[in-house]
Length: 185
Image (cartoon, rainbow, N blue to C red; front, top):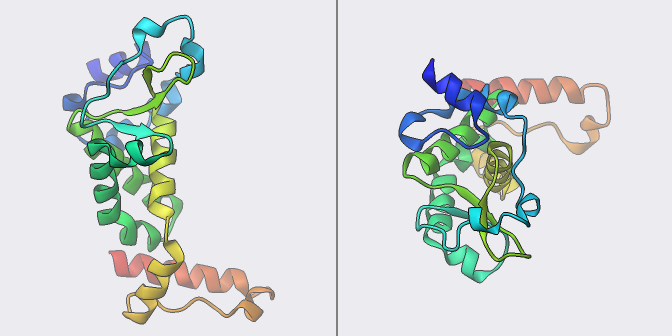
């Protein structure tokens, strides 16, 4: 009950030690009414971080961000879940997988940070941004993952492109999803 109060009264994430499984706090994104964006902090540079920790995931592009220890760990965790995510039968299963990945980052004290170009300081992204970044990372290489699953017999091939144009394409997609779901279970 105190966790709910903490979430409802703060725009920050709950402490990592209190959040072991993000599936239990799916209501967090609904309660969070303010979105913390780096550009909102131009006058509050002292609240940002000068240096991220080795556990933080840095949002952005470039070699230095790519090589940051938190980002290296994030990519390794994502790699562990990619096949499961891309063969998941529905959006709820995919969302749960994304939450699991984000939860692992939080569990070790990591945060998702973005650098404010004006101040040069780092600010924590909200949970929605963390989940979007994670889902995008999990989708990278999806066609190859699905093709490999078909070759390995973990998945049956979806209908050909010609049949997708017909009204049977919905039926084919539903069959594909059921078969994928059965494999995961």
